[in-house]
Length: 195
Image 1 (cartoon, one colour):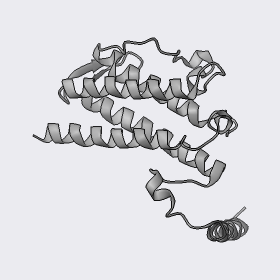
Image 2 (spheres, rainbow, N blue to C red):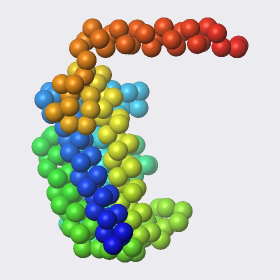
Image 3 (tube, rainbow, N blue to C red):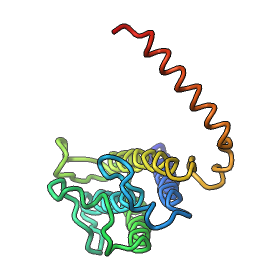
Image 4 (cartoon, rainbow, N blue to C red):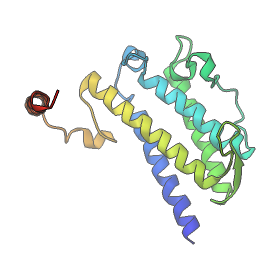
């Protein structure tokens, strides 16, 4: 009984955070979803592309249920091309693939018990259960949703997990005053810190 509860709970949270990832793209122009917003090139559409490949591999290959479509490369030696969209990849193509990956992942999760075995050859302890992969993919998606939240805030001030909560953010003047107070506190703490 606890096994089904745990599986359903983790799966529900994964579904929610996936939607958050896509909401981070809503209403932004093409350039803003693609442009590098950090020194390493992190960008919103690239995060979605990366998560689609990650999720397809973990809920596909790990359980011998490969995603039925070709996927972009996922290889650290490939200079991180899984983390950004080329000019030939459309936003719609990447989002649609992510949604198809969800369907495939959801089918794997539904078909398997939480203690079903899988194999992750690139992990130090490669023998896993569905539980391990649910936790891993949820953590990975949540981590990147945090990145996406910061990137989106830099672009237009939008924050939060869903559009219906974005209006709860304070106005620009309130945000500026809060930021100034935090800056003053940081400078005062740094000035008083031992050298």
